[in-house]
Amino acid sequence: MSSAASVWLVLLAAAVAANLPFVNERLFVVGPQRAPKGLGWRVLELALLFALVLGLGFALETRQGQRHAQNWEFYAVSLCLFLTLAFPGFVWRYLRRHRR
Image 1 (spheres, rainbow, N blue to C red):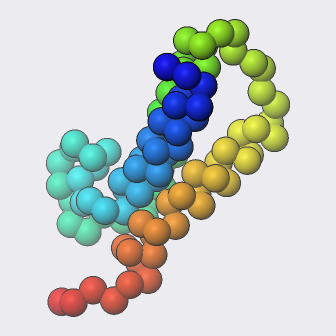
Image 2: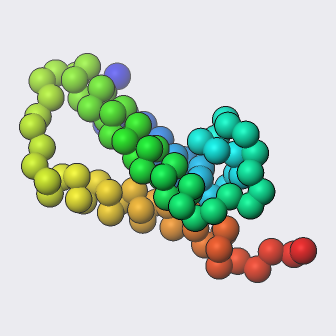
Image 3: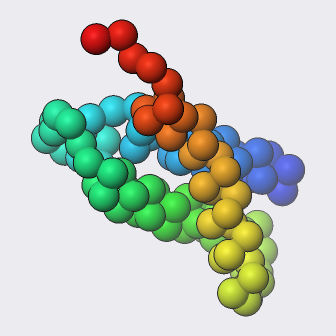
């Protein structure tokens, strides 16, 4: 897999994973259904999915060659990007008026 394809794969996985906690009522996507699932569970799921996407990126980087050491700035920027990608799901869940 080329490096460009790896980047797009990680970005696509991040976009999907960032919105998963907001579009379903199951715990960690496959667990028991909770109605309604609280914001705390969603934030916990978001943190776990962020770690999984980060691990996917590290695995793809290792597969292509030597993995580079990262400082705290990398993690801060990647977390901000992940939260930005989660914004559509947050808006859909909490700011949109749902028909009852």
